[in-house]
Each structure stands twice: as structure tokens, then as C-alpha cells.
Image (cartoon, rainbow, N blue to C red; front, side, top):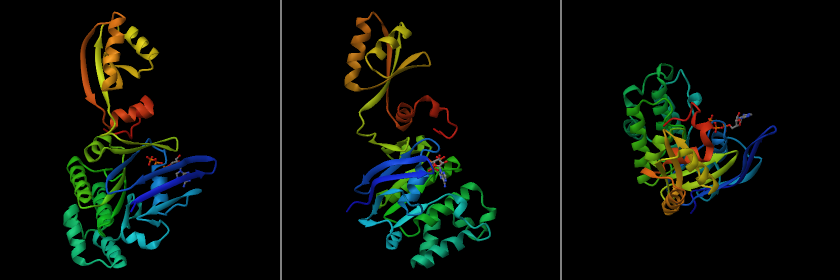
Length: 300
Ligand SMILES: Nc1ncnc2c1ncn2[C@@H]1O[C@H](COP(=O)(O)OP(=O)(O)OP(=O)(O)O)[C@@H](O)[C@H]1O
């Protein structure tokens, strides 16, 4: 049974088309990251998947049922941003509310809190929480029901490195236990450590990739006549930029020999070649270009 099926989702706010006929499928438990610049429609898409927002057209199926079926929320969870928290309630109050609605035990609350690491301040009011403490509570709320599908919107926001590592390990552990995780994040360094399955979202459309199967690597070449080399490679439609006095080229391994031959034939000498496996950061740069690389929200 398919875990999540997103079919032809389109959404506009007024005249602004935010999601343009988005489709993808998660057929078996895996971790999938949703990556894109600010305002690319990630949160809108997650809200549509969880039926908090209606699309203009399209369908969502979760675990073989339409996302409008209230019963799927016993098996699906959505970690939203901290605006869903109540300042004058404690962390425990929030968890107890979910436990009551979903018929979960007090033991489950304590076990989950220990797992997430928020058991030490469970009885403090949320108004006294730091951003990281709020993130921990939101995560505990989301995994309390041991969901089959867990949707996380920017779960690493505001976390110090130790907390981020803990959340990352928790996500990997949940996946090993059979949970499918759809995670939106700007933190590409963390995403690389969690998964190679990435859905890049650009101009309301998606580019879906498994970077592990994506045989592209980045090569850094030190060459004799850089500007001439760049001109030659661009003529060959090879994506190349100058970075730190070296040519940065995105090609698959087989094409490297061609690049070397082309350059040598034009009298350009190659002093050094360094190979780097493409991670989500490099792929992001290829898809979204330099402009978004300078975006402050683009953390690595
Ligand atoms: N309720 C709304 N009314 C009007 N426009 C909206 C609304 N919600 C989002 N938008 C617009 O839709 C676009 C996509 O927003 P969305 O929050 O889905 O993107 P995002 O990828 O999650 O962004 P970020 O990474 O900054 O959180 C943005 O241009 C935003 O201004």
C-alpha cells in the first residue's frame, strides 16, 4: 500500500500560483526531504497533505485513504511551527490533550518525553520555554502516537547542535522502526545526514531525486587558462563556474574523460583535479543558482 500519494496538486493565493500540478509518491517507508527557497510553497504543500488547507485541485491519499478521512490521523502526525502551542499550558498539558484524543497512556507520554529529551521540563509552562524547548515539545507531540507517516516542517529550526543531532538520530531511529518521514528543511547539511531522497521544489513545481542514485559529482579543476577553458566548456553545454580560482564543473563521472580531452586538445593544461560527491547543497546550487545560495535561510 502506498504511504503517501500526492496527485496533481495546484494551489493559488489570489493571482499567485504557488503549487503547479505537483505529484509524487512515497511507496514504502523512507525519509523524504522537501527542499526549496523561502516562499516556494513547502508549508502550503504540507498543509494541503494534512488537510489543513484545501488545494484548488488535486488529490491526496495517505495509507490508501483520502486525507479527508479523520481516521488517518491516528496513524499520521504533523509537526507544525510553535504557533500551535499555548503559552499558559505546560508541555505535559499539550501531550495529555493529544493522549486523551488518541487514547494513549500516561506511560506513552513519559516514554516519548524521555526519548525526545524534554522530560526534565515537562511541567513548566510553555511561556518559559526557549525556541529549542518548544521544538522538542512539538516533536514529542508529533511522535506520541507512533505514526506511520510523520510530517515535519522545519524541525531543526532554533536547535543548538547537540539538540539537532539528537533530533536527527531520533528521525533515523523512527525510520528504522518503520515510520515514513516527510521533512521540510533549509538545513542541507543536516538533510544530507538524514536522507538522499530529496524533493526540490521550484516555481511551484518539483524535481524529485534520489541523490544516492544520482551519479553526478562535482569536479574542481586547476587549469592554465581559466577564462578560455570556461568558454570552451560552456560551448560544450557543460555547467561550469569559477570558484576560488578553480573551475567547478558538474558532470557525471563518464563525462570527465571528455572534458579532459576537450581541454587538452585546446592546449589547456590541467594541474589538478579534485572530486566531490554531489550532496544536496551542490544540487541545490545547480537547481536554484547563486541567488538562493546567498539567501540567509540557506543554512549548511
Ligand atoms: N495564507 C496565505 N495567503 C496568501 N499568500 C500566502 C498564504 N500562505 C502563503 N502564501 C504565499 O505563498 C507562497 C508560498 O508560501 P509557503 O509558506 O508555502 O512557502 P515555504 O516554501 O514554506 O516558505 P518558507 O521556507 O519561507 O517557510 C509565498 O509567496 C507566501 O507569501
